[in-house]
Amino acid sequence: MTRKPVVAITMGDPGGIGPEIIVRALEGRKVQSSCRPVVIGQSGVLSGAAALLGSSLRFHAASRVGATAPAGSVALVEAGSPRERFQQGRPTASGGRLSLAAIEKAAALALTGSVDAVVTAPISKEAIRKAGSPFPGHTEMLASLTGTKKFAMMLVGGPLRVSLATIHIPLRQVPDALTAAGIGRVIDLTRDVLPDFGAADGKIAVCGLNPHAGEAGIMGEEDRRIVAPAVRAAARRKINVSGPHPADTVFFRAARGEFAAVVAMYHDQGLIPIKTLAFDTGVNLTLGLPIIRTSVDHGTAYDLAGKGVAGSDSLVAAIRTAAELARNRAMRS
Image (cartoon, rainbow, N blue to C red; front, side, top):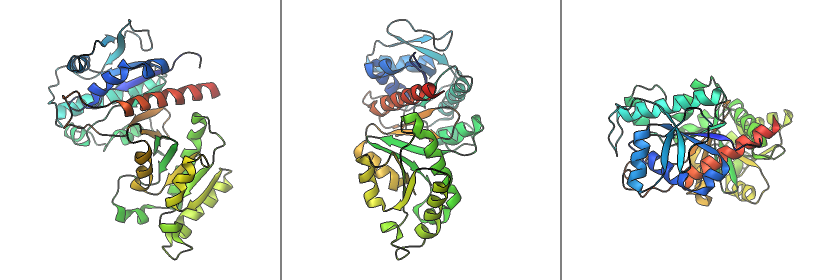
């Protein structure tokens, strides 16, 4: 790809910090140098956020996605009704409807190739539920919009790339939720995305569930009975993979460059090392979609909305990661 990739950035929940962090992110050179951004949302909401922050950034209605916006402005595609009346600092049905409209528009643009990647600002699960959405969040909605059946979450931060075999379930349910087939799908999806990072031949490490990866069954049978067979089956599929590895050492080894990615068994096992090393710059990447989608690794932060204090480091990292993936994917096609 010789041109800069076009990256769509959804507004997120208008009652949260999404509009503010978008303005902050787009003021900086790091974003403008990496891609051609186009914001999907309501111009009034974004302009209001710019005014709150004392920013001179303007939003220009895009007649054609990818067209060059005037100097000092960013292209914007309207999504949702301007008549929606949300409340700042709390989840509302109106805010949920605007969030959903932006996601739907961005997904449609990505599926038609009008944009090269999608970056999502944070939404509220409560707000989209108030708006009537059947989806618990971005990932499931984008999977439905793109007809995707197999998908997973990867977190990228600092030197680590970590995929999750299970996500938002209680810890006591994790052992019963793990299957060799399910772990195998996450290994496959992790392998599939590594070329987009320029690490096509990189090795994948798979975490054990129990301390010391079960210690030959002494500390739990799941690693020997479920995780190890998944790793062996993936190796037979010619995937460069090893494990199960004790989780208390594998992230140190990955951070030193021994592994290109790690598959963790549950949410906190994978996110604690990411947030320890890259708390402000972590990026959420959805694996398995036919489009590139990244996101911030934080929520709407209603308590900070309207105060002009929210930081945009995670959004900047999400945009730059999306642009990198789009460039690498285009060069391979």
